[in-house]
Length: 311
Figure 1 (cartoon, one colour):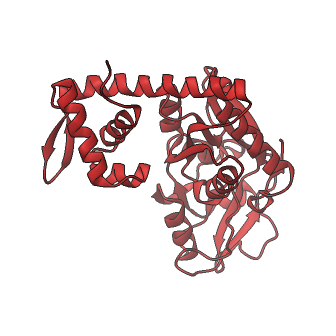
Figure 2 (tube, rainbow, N blue to C red):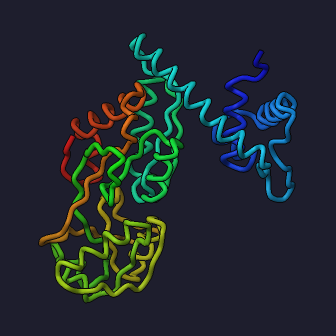
């Protein structure tokens, strides 16, 4: 007879993945004492220590804990699949939904999507994760996330992409930049000036490839992995930068004006959309999320980020 619950397994997985009861508490919105008690009960039931308690460094999984974590993740995924089957039969959308989003535009798109989706589907328990492109691919393959909002950058053949918006590249410049008063710029214009490169895996390769069309190399003055830092560096005239999602504000995070100009000529646009594993569409929650995001685009509710709707 089983003497542990799915809820206890959920708490164990949250601690195992975050390495901290405090972080797990924030992630699943459950009090730390409740999580700690559940872990102790599981260890007593299994007769195994699952974690090594390190006061300065949080919790580390034991060898047994690492093996049990893999199995617990599998059990929770299968339990979620049972909820999907029940939802299909009953015609309801419920259960957990883990959504990943590309770091470069998560702050502009994901909160809006999540708020509206959770209002329409209150029985779905949604979690979000901000990652770079390579991390999103890995998380989907390991079933750590169910769906990812991202660009069509180097998409693997084993993942399925639903396009939502076509986003051409744009240039971000300070108000004092020599090109700031133009109505548009070309890649040739930009190649003559210092660049602040958003240096994320695959994203950086895309930005650099835009210069291949003109046979030039950019003058990279600064690199950053943070979108907000990039905009502040542009606002402080360290150089221009290139992005695909239009900022909602015409100022940098530290208050300096930033101009956004279209890039004229033969430049590759990116498609923003939803990426899933090949079998993810069997989930009622994933299907509902894709349909909700497509409708949001079709009704113009994401027009503020720029681009051409494809959904």
